[in-house]
Image (cartoon, rainbow, N blue to C red):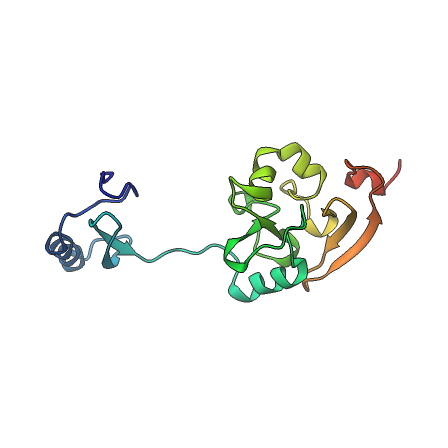
Length: 179
């Protein structure tokens, strides 16, 4: 049931008494599946059950490694505050992409805004620039266009190996390997 009071789409309870009763009933029944860990009051004054969040993203250590390597958005060069950056998977997690340094890039925005949004909405160009990698190809083998000027390969230890300078605005990995 979507709550008109908060709009977040989770089952809403109008009082702390109601959410407490539901929380205790679920715990007492010990139903299979995910159990609530507690409850919280949402903006709008309604209450929701809380569940453990599954985090499939990179570990804090790996995130720090990628942030230290990239320092700015790899596409546009924008300095992004820590709480506004976005770690992007070159091979998306849903297609088997792993949380490894060579599969992760620092981009500004979210999946719908900034450069991260651009990558998601301009996928052909993003593949050509190495911001996306096709399933089955090792991200170590696909260079990334850094800030529109250099091609570089990300390494597992969180570094870049610069491979070449782009002569035009629309360079691609194939420019590095003439036929």
